[in-house]
Image 1 (cartoon, rainbow, N blue to C red):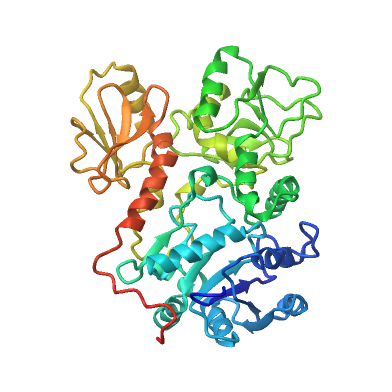
Image 2: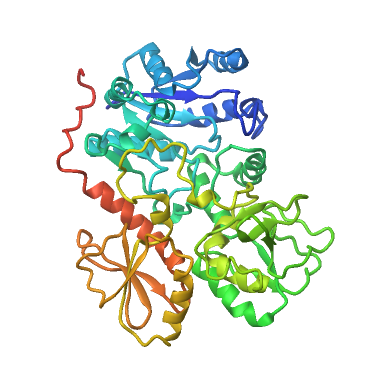
Length: 499
């Protein structure tokens, strides 16, 4: 950066991954290693003045240190678990003291330089301590990085003692927003696709990364984020179903999710090459039918939470999608097409980004291992992020069709959800707490801090779980948090001045 705050990119990598050992030295994108690709892409950032590679002092990570040196980057080695101390070491080894540090995780080899530049600019203009793309996520995961001020990193080093905070650095700030000013990086409309994960955590993730990279590699770097989202949106999907009466509902779901309409058939048409195949009937896939983003079917799995969407092309048919708040998911007597149609609005965008890694049935209910127990802004829990804690519903006759389907959905709702029969007024509503349904079944969320209701669709066609994850609502939540920092928070540290 020629003017303004000095920015240091701290590149973090280690070989000891428990889920995918050795992934950092795998060849990728025409380079000898994932690390080399990440560094090359980061070097295209306009904002970064200097790089330091920070790996561990474990013998297994010596090849990484040697690789970084060969790439012309300064290297420090430190504690395996204490990432904070490694980052502080890297900061102290820089040729000039930085004002801002970007935590570069090599698990994200398709990082987009333009989004890093945008994040640093937003951090500086907001006078914030840290900016994160992952919390209140709207961008595809893995395209941006976390940035923070040097002062913020030193505060974390001085104040954070719990191991979870020493390993997951910025979480100390995210759980103390009364004393840290946090900014949530928000995707512009054309880049909104949080279901797309481009992080390298397991072997199947590499398949997905290669699939998407091969299709954008000839695009200029500045055009690649939009190209990736377009690839997901324009997924060529083949849906095999037995009942043509479902066609209009299936097509409407895809269009409502912002995806291209699928090809619908009872058997696979000849000479078609889909990106994704969905088999709604509970039957094996036709011999030889493959698709790069998966051949997904609906299966009942005893002892694993009931109905799941599974990758039928893999020998053990692992579950790749499960949502706990879909009416009838736990009932084995239901037809698989009925279950699939219930899951499709929540699953379609995720499946379009496959191939997907196997997920345990309760994955969505388990708190992240990065949680240190502090209070974060936004949702009170992961359950609250998936389903509203309060439903304010207009009084209607019990036999009203949309009310009957709502009652069925609420049978699987978490115990913390309360339904209040009252005319929706918005007086006590909250974008993180309450969903309102009027007498016609129209769903919306109100928050007096926003000043206008956010329309989320109608109960005749949209479930509560689907509405609660509506793109417009997710964006409004990020806007609200960014526009209304805690007034009691300390003044931001002035960048470029002595601490």
